[in-house]
Length: 145
Image 1 (cartoon, rainbow, N blue to C red):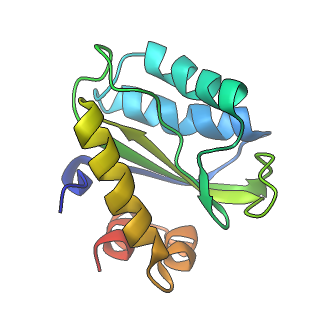
Image 2 (tube, rainbow, N blue to C red):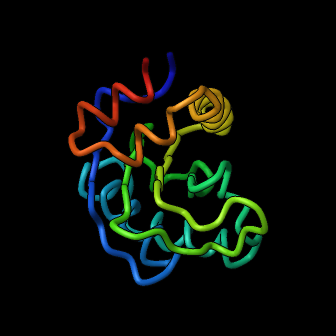
Image 3 (cartoon, rainbow, N blue to C red):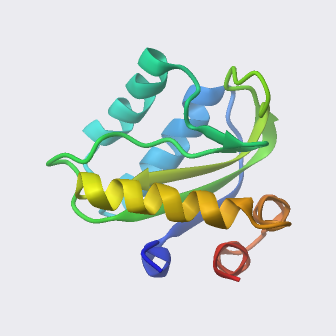
C-alpha cells in the first residue's frame, strides 16, 4: 500500500460554510502535520476555482489536491468529515461530507496515491464508514480494510 496512512490526520465534525472552507480545513490539517507549506492550501482552492469540482470523485467525497511542488515536504493525507455536507458544484456526487486532502512529493507518487485512494473508496461501504468515523482509528480502518 502506498497511501501514507501511518501519518494521516483525521478531523471529525468539522463545520464548513462552503466548499472553500471544507478544502481549507483539509489543507490546514496538512500544514499542521508538517507535510506542506501554507501556499499548498491556496493552490488546492485555486485548482478547483480553475478546473471546477474535478476533485469530487465519488458520491459525498472530495479529494482536493495540488501539483507536487517544493511546498510539499512529504506524502500525506488529511481526512476531514464535515458536520453537514456542502455542495462543490458536481452534477452527480454533491453534496460532499468527506474531504480527503492529498499531498505528494512527486508527480508519479501523486498519481499512484490518487489511484490507490480511488480503489479504496470504490470498495462497498468504505465511504459510509468514513463518514460515520468518530476516531482516527475508525477512519484508517475504513481505508485499509
